[in-house]
Image 1: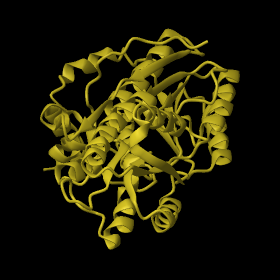
Image 2: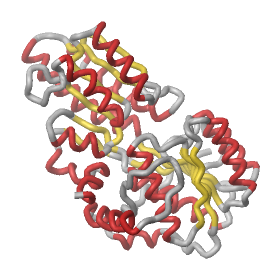
Image 3: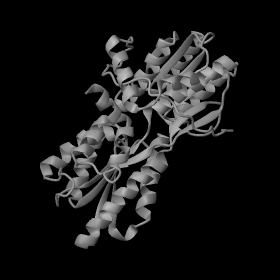
Image 4: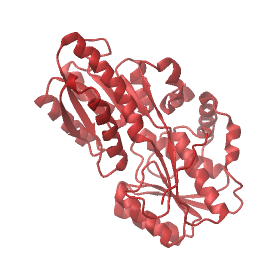
Length: 365
């Protein structure tokens, strides 16, 4: 049912403003930061003209699962600030990681006669339920960064190519592991910190990492799977347990950058939070491309990061939902892929300033 769209270039329209989970108005400071981020990115602001006239689009619901990570906050700010700047009323709903509450919020948005819905779903299964709910009410819906479990229903899905970007980052990690193996002759134990497998993004990232490892299996002793459930406390406890049972873990790949503080808090007391080149350095990589990962790469602690482009995805979701409303299409059905890329210690000179987290850092400096 899905039809792949060709990827279009979108401008960077917003930047990170630290917020809580409540709705926020556009401030002068936020607008200035947005403008600086756009300039830093090197994208032309004229690309914003890809959004069609918004004369008949008056009200959009933005339903998000939470604002726990920098990626979600950046996406939230980009969407809310841009739509409001275009004179569109944004009704915000924070589900606080409760799928049942989020479904109630989607129904409430429909009852308020919104023109369209942008949704960050709690998980892939609940996303499917909410897509069907919007379809039944003939309200166009776009999923931002988290696709539904199946291709049932009609929905705009904007998502990174998670398997491919994880694979590319993991390829670099494997190449670094090969260097260690060739030097020491010791096979490497992998610690694989896996996200919530109810989220198809987590599944794709897992598959991408495993694909890269399978290309050079002889250098690895085994893989220790470390569930995180996308929860900091769960990740902390399970990584600590894994390091106790397998103290020789020499490579860690994590499903999301937001868990680096937990990784550091476990490795540091063990003397294993060391920069690249130190004999106690554990090869590290993750997925997202936030500012924390950017700084850790600059400081030499992280080897590679799989980057998804939060600004591309936010703009794609907005453009597509507005186009559907303006065209009178109540059940748009398309997939927009964010190709992303891998930032590695080997391509920093070329790719460093293209990572959204580094764009934020530059805008704030």
